[in-house]
Length: 152
Image (cartoon, rainbow, N blue to C red; front, side, top):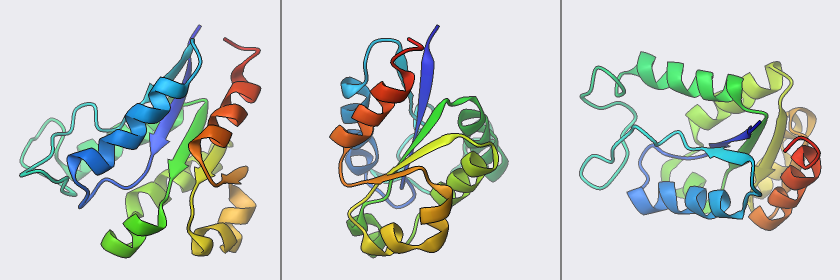
């Protein structure tokens, strides 16, 4: 039986590479039986960037995006959140990602945050509601392997 890791992180305003490359990298690092759930699987970049909403009644509306992201967070065994300082400085804090952290916390999911951002690392709500705050994906995958290893 597969286990699922939801890959939450900045999308709006990001280029296709910035939004997808780290997710592909993490997916390749995961052990057999652990599936990376990519929220971009049915969302296209518009003119090379991702927009908050776009003209597609199936996947581009606010309700569709929220519904899919809620579904993914709910189904995940672990939520891996990537919050790089550079993305916050360029686009602002990822509001959608913060919702996903809140949902995951409310559902008592295991939450791993990978960040180099001291504001994120030091925020009291992140420290209280996130299980691990780590500096890189290698350590995050070690935690994932440690938690899910006996289940896959």
